[in-house]
Image (cartoon, rainbow, N blue to C red):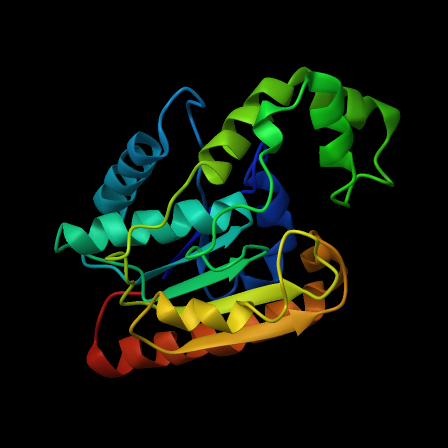
Length: 233
């Protein structure tokens, strides 16, 4: 079984591959790269979906994404679904409001200085080295492009996923609203479970053990079903 890893805005899948290492004894972790930040969200989704389709014919797979990665993962699942081809059995999403709500902010229109400062305020950067913060500055255009795709996204009412959804939420995440998170169940036809954890937008790195346990338990169910039905893992 493959688990495709969708990074946050400006991020690389390497961060999540390290974080998800405890799962490598049960699934194959597959990094998803956003090759071009010049694409529209629709073009990016189609590009990624086409690659996944070629890699996972007749194979069970799932998606995991954080923040912007949750949006991309969801839309890739919808694209595959609309094509009538293999689709993920499970969407593990985190750090994202239900897509029926428009973005709270429009950071992508800020000047570089304000945009950079706002990104740092989201958390996960307070302990970064000066060199790593400078690296963020160098790739600010890439981060801005991802934020633009996320912040200008408008949810199409007919985008309803067939896959089960697990939503992970940080209770102190300024990007989400704790009272809204249950609305994710309006975006799929399968089971939808929301798990809340203490922490800010990057809470997942503070709760690795608990979150890995949640994911492992859910993946075990699908692996068991595959063995029963004789489907390739």
